[in-house]
Image (cartoon, rainbow, N blue to C red; front, side, top):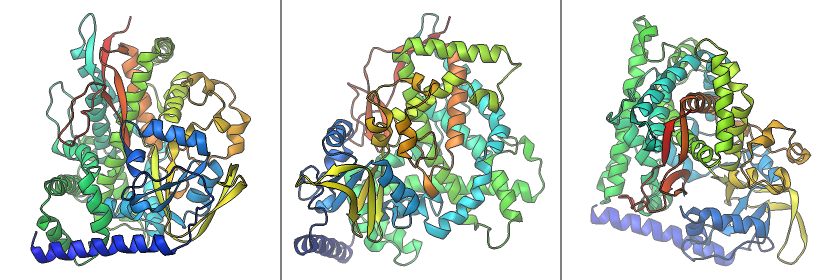
Length: 553
């Protein structure tokens, strides 16, 4: 990096820090009466405890039990923040006043820079326009049409895992298989493109490798500092070429690795898009493409070509959807599937009942199950719902107050002076930690057994408190897929993927705990590892989920 540029950046960062410190010294404390833990550090506040991969869950469980549905915490440089899981407050944030409580600036900048102007990198009318165009391709009607694609990939996955299973059973690391199949499902059903033939020993596609590694790289402390302190100061300055030059000049290996991975993702997205566009313009037989011409991108391109000028999306935004859909679906769904297989290995009685249910269903049908039959299997549905309730793959999201707001509470909290608080004033600029995890586990909503994995709760009437809480989630009174205008657009896609893969694997295989203890790490997305796993190049534990797999009797 050139000395003048380094000095300029250092001056900008120092000015920003000084402004934050001065503001804190002269401004009135907006949360003086809101209870919460003391700051652990003048530099990092409570952030290191909140994001620690191995201890964050236990730390936050303790705070929620102590302080209730809304409590105060501290961000970087002790910035005023709130941790929120009260359902009424969540409704205010993500539905009623969603224009006030937007995605954080860091989240939007990062997504727009790396993935382009797709759903997670846009807000307001821009976001609504994209969503309007995308909604039809994620409908139940379209999921019905794509079900055969899911089965084709699921059966190839089962075949390859079967090639690794010995007569007496053996340990197999299932996480790579779940990740590979998730990407291939997104590739074929999303873009009409095959990333992976799912063969044993097959080479990982560069797109998959880059997509998986970007999240870990973004969590690197140095990259995080650049994102939060430096990037806001240069984002939007000049052309993309100028911004690229800034990245090239900065002497940080991790940042350059992130640049190179982003290049791979964007290059692949352009190739996929151009291939689809060419096929449509030249009138080729798209039924011969991966996905049989029913993939989301093909349908989306057709709709976009016939849309009015007002509704039509520009090509760069269509290309960005490819990267966006991959990042939104690959890691979350593959880790959710891994979690369910781990849970079933620890609960053999549930696993056996579920195996009987899927075997009976397949025995009564000629070939694969149709969408409606598969999604209606009661125990399979209950296992998926309960696992997604108790173990949301993405436990925490951030929002930022763009103006002053008020959060009404479902359950009052007690102030630092012992008074009852029924609503919380939130000043402009406040960061809010939105806990999907703790809303899903709230005992005041789900009962005293809220922290237990009990699929059978979904096979009988839920407690009245579930309906009374009016949780604003788009799925099953849960926050797992969020809610409001920024709810996960692909949640039906994820459910179909999970049910196809689980039904096929359980019909054939039996899963049991392996020799190594599985631990779950909160790396932004909750991911499996083993207790004695070595550290990776990022300084975090290597990921994996070895289970004993055998042919089911």
